[in-house]
Length: 180
Image 1: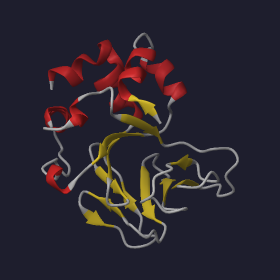
Image 2: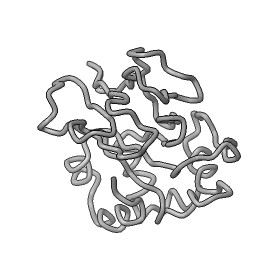
Image 3: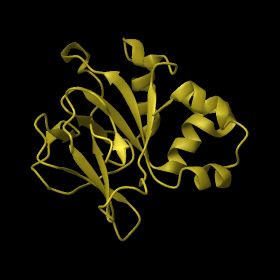
Image 4: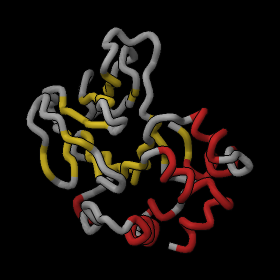
């Protein structure tokens, strides 16, 4: 995981093409641990400008990009599941989140034939949700720009395809995310 503000600074001079070479797959922007009282965050919106604005105006610490994290959805070469990008608490996953409410093998991402991604819950103890809807074990849910993913009932993230992430957080020094 990278800190959003550090990532914005690190890649600020990158062209879109350069950024997409580094991050060809989607990115998840975390909201830190979301408490029940913070549930007024949006589930999903087709107007991503409103989504970004609502997330950045949220009345708790996620409004500060120095505490928000970015999770790259990408394959780790040591993983044995060729077609899955696995997420879990143990080191043999592609995305390792060493948090007590994340299962050893919690969920996985699949790249679909059209280039988009889907997520599935891997029979985790604390579940995986997309837009406040709990996924059944191994149910594939295609992800769309702005979807809210909750992992383990506590870690809430917003789904960004790489071009959208570049547009909102990197291009022009993240000007679009500050205007929203």
